[in-house]
Image (cartoon, rainbow, N blue to C red; front, side, top):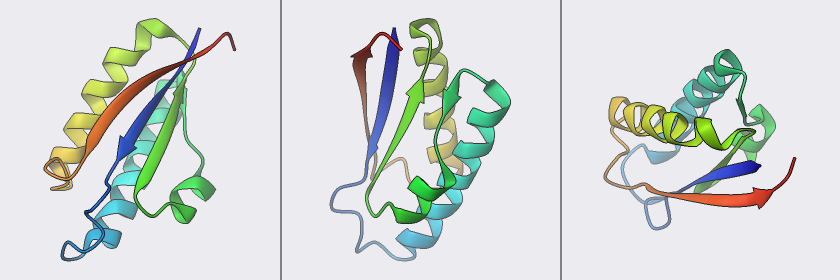
Length: 93
């Protein structure tokens, strides 16, 4: 089963230096997904995004691990207070 982790930053666009922090977070998340091999997000998606990122996780066993990693990265980039994380089952991959 494939899953998506949706990281929503609705309403945070007006926070000081949000876009800069958002892009840096997205790039770190991309690197982590690339290293993990079970999750993916495109750099193009990060560049186009304004207030939401979507990570696709190919194994349900890896969802919790990626959520934990995402929360850690949000904290490192001082974005945890703005983010809301959702897990969505998108069915078989």
